[in-house]
Image 1 (cartoon, helix red, strand yellow):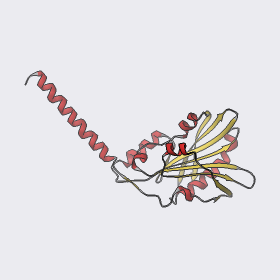
Image 2: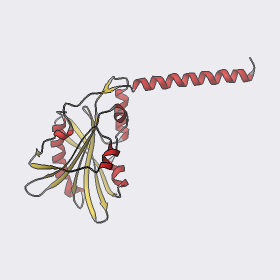
Image 3: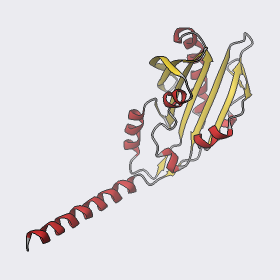
Length: 212
């Protein structure tokens, strides 16, 4: 066997191994998404002393979001405290396979907001620690604070790194949980001013989400 023939055979073997490896990896990520018991639209209008009002989502934003279920609602308390709750749920395999879809840190910056401060905190929920990423944002003369987290079944996370770890744990499973994102926004001049009401409402929303 001459040198050229040896190289051809070696290339063929490597290509074959690569094809087998790729097929094996893809097979591990072939799954169905467990259906939610109810859509995010069913989140109560009366929640923790707040009364909610549905807010329309821009059609272009809805197309980009590509979520299977959403809720976009302003909640107001009798004392005037106002919060915006946005929740999205991805229920199709091709969307769930994406790690931490539509990360607010990317989306808000893309919409012209500047991140002035970021904190990563943990809340004590009834099921354990609930991580939440909190951002203080500014755009022109407007300032706000947002807190967000993702859920997949009983797993919660805020970063793509954490999402990849969860995906690796799910590798080979035939059924995966839907990917949910919850975001709470309020006007404030800093994280410290907004954090108590965001934390309180986040725990209420998280407790409700356990019924999904």
